[in-house]
Image (cartoon, rainbow, N blue to C red; front, side, top):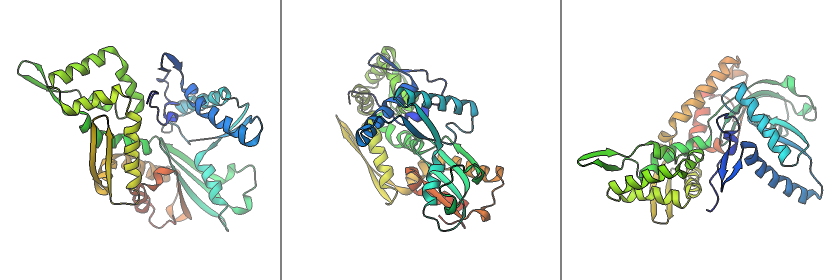
Length: 335
């Protein structure tokens, strides 16, 4: 845990407000962070092929940030730069759901109109296209693609919501402290929103915020759960906490009960989570995906009766609420 927790870095590619981050006083732009991952992939490919791999096809979401063209252009520019930094000289891009669709096409025996939903960590993308096994080797498939779009919600959104509802109480959310003699206040909730996403965790590095946290701890009468927040920050435990949250989510994809379990340096979490409870926690994000899907179908004049099959891909597609959402919205379409 001597590094720094960075999760789903693709999410910051579209944010103009993200200029850089510093890790051990070294400056990293968004492109630099992605390049680290691509360099590792390139070195493995070079080793496997015994060649210097210079060409790459990079998957990308249909929209990096909710149909915003300007943000989308910024994200792809940064991704292109990352590939160049990693040593690739010829780079092409493919929408991730289209890549998934072509994989599905290989299993078909006849032509189908297919709605592909790609549910990843950061985004949920939709592509509606005509697939035909007879066209599988054609290079130009533009005319077969009838609509695409995406929304900036995915599995990481679910994990953040879970951390807020079930994680933060163990780190002192709702802690009371004595601001002045006889005046009791609640510790600011902003502290706890900062442990729900990796981009905000670095917020705790400043001397002033560290001093504030120590003061809250002292004036809370050394509240045990608030001490967990100090332990989390000082020992850089964010990554391991989110691993436990993700494991809880995975367990609930095929079971009705899971245990949110975390035991590190005095932090003790052992809480049973029922599927219905989990579904309530992520309900707001599920509703936003459902509303986007309905709007996508309406805007592109797609009649559900014309959809031959729905193809789900991406880890988040396994979440029970997601499966229910599609069953409810497109009840007569083959999954």
